Length: 234
Image (cartoon, rainbow, N blue to C red; front, side):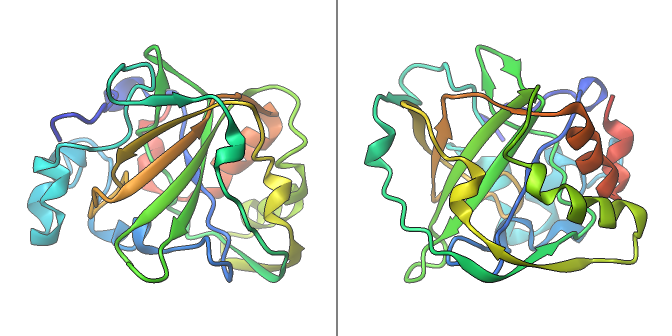
């Protein structure tokens, strides 16, 4: 992974949650569909450095030239677009939403800005209904603070934490607009999926505005993940 920015696992401070909104056209399982065949654990021979060797269809993980994530301040690779209105959004109200905890949606690589990493990053993955290998991902960076955006999911996430046997919950009506895709500017670049098969057919849109998540919500999300990779967190 020549152009990919990978922090050393021993100094990783936190994690990234990919929230996939099921039963909506913006959802896809392909980004994490092979998660049991790879991991982030040091010396497992399945960590990121070896992903390209684990499966013949994952060669982009090793030899790809447009691997994500990247540092958003790199000129010539990432464009800063001044008006968010150019992102066409047509989300519909979901009346039968399922929140699924697969226990391993944890990634130890995420976008940086001037080499700084934020506390959490949310990915909204959009799949192309005509070209299944094409993706568009909206990423939102978070820091610890007041957090209205994720508060509505707190009760559901608490259920996952308190009962590890619960894998999915029917959360009823969910409006994707409540996630809070707002702001005046955003970063845009062509990159890849951040997990195998590391497909390089992804248009990334990263909001410039840094949102906030409370420390309680942050640790609640962390506790809901039951994965060996958590041993690499500090």
